[in-house]
Length: 441
Image (tube, rainbow, N blue to C red; front, top):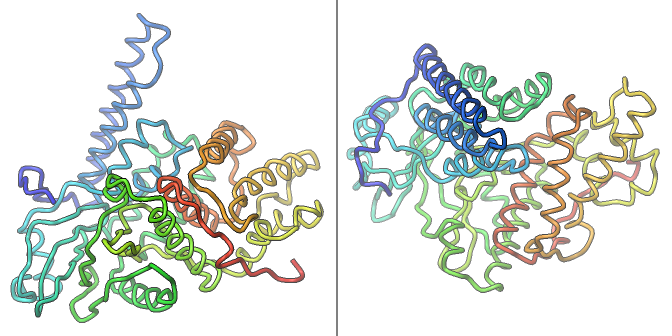
């Protein structure tokens, strides 16, 4: 928790004009960074882009932090896609997974008055006006009511109303950082916009949180807070306070391998139960959304981002990861066509190329599913995974959009899960909740 009021924001640019001006100002800074870089390069032709990336990442992150909302959320997402960005961006944007400059007290009170017609002190017995955690879309405050400790999540002003315009403003920065084709970037941004519009609807989040926590109650070593719809609104959520440590804090305690495995197993079961039994999944697997409790349980504290998997995506995709479909080239290509990884306009040579590359990619991704246990601590697997991702990101054949839109969040979910399990160095039993497949696929 930050007690330093100097770091608080007393306002957030909420109008399109204000937010656009912020991006323009950042654009000028980045232009200046490029001029500085190329001026230095005149005198030192061997100069690499490390300093340029560091300067740009700092300026972009500072701007997104002040804007909050969808702008900062995209930075958070990109920090998880480690093979898409230079390391300087990953390091800087990773901060958005844990904290951002908090809002000042008067803005917090203003939000409560707008949605409840009361100050927080009139609703709770105790309310700490200083936030304990500030992230991309909202910040969390500690409160107390009837002797029960509560977490109160408050959405930043203007976040829900500025998503579409923000994403248009982010597009030039994303285009430069990611090197995607415009068509691919459009698909990416449309899917992100759809999920963010849901994520800023806190009434929807409360309903989903209750639904998912009740469904996942069958899982071992996974716990959830109780939610209070009567103390929640479109922009405020009240839930029980879960005591525990975030992943970094937990790892700093040098936990035993047994405890790492227990938390890793809970994470694996949490995600695979949702994917295969609910066909909808918590699609925001960054460490800030989980707590590890003192008694060794995994606490899931945020269900804002949920990705539903329709049958026409689920069955062909998981048939590739969990059956002997790869034994038949014809059936594999059929599944790739259903998933739009191979397109009707592809030439025979392109079909062969994409068949080979996607088979290799999914074969790598599916390794944890092939055996009944998997050691996520092994460096070689992740080196191979990231090296392959880096290789295809540089191939001109992959500048064209490939794959249905559902891949964006499903890939993000599963690779995010893999990354957390890698940080835990967990050995996991991977056959607990297996994909369902159709006979005819």
